[in-house]
Image 1 (cartoon, rainbow, N blue to C red):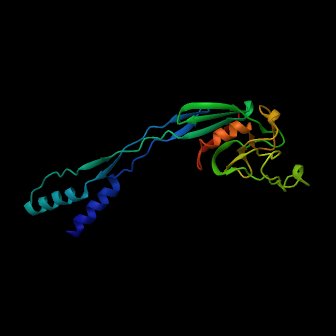
Image 2: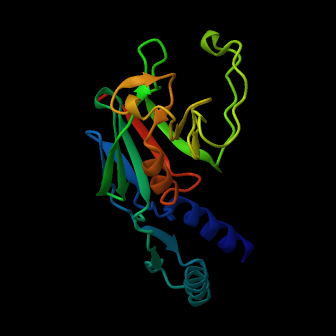
Image 3: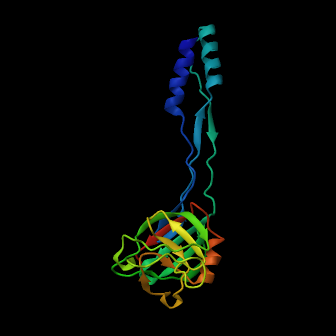
Length: 209
């Protein structure tokens, strides 16, 4: 009966289908839910039993192989950030539901905020600011400890784009303009509010407008 076991295993490899969970994607600069797709799995044990019974009886018959439906997970309503660089605004969604919008400052023309799909990879409270020594504008500047005058304010949400993050600012007049060196600046109180509602792994989409 080893041939039966092997044949059923081969059949399962051809018929089994893994479920696909629903996800949230960006379409026309807004989050949308994709439909989940259920999977299926061959009932290997009952299939083997039916084949063996047919072999023992010697009957030539059609054998129905049972398939089990596997439910797919629905998309979870989790925080998603969409930043419209051209109008300097940040949109926080919970799944597809808009929660709140904020004016922000994005990068100057010579230091543009990168476009693309990123994630929050680090969260810091009362961060130090360290000058990016590879950039000419930061030459001669020294690190700034937490407190008044820190360019990052009181919160840092670093993105998977190297050197880029969402943070507060000690230049609140820059909000609403393209004034940063690539990061996304928020009012200090807004950055503190956002900080408590996102996590490591929260997706961040930066789009042109």
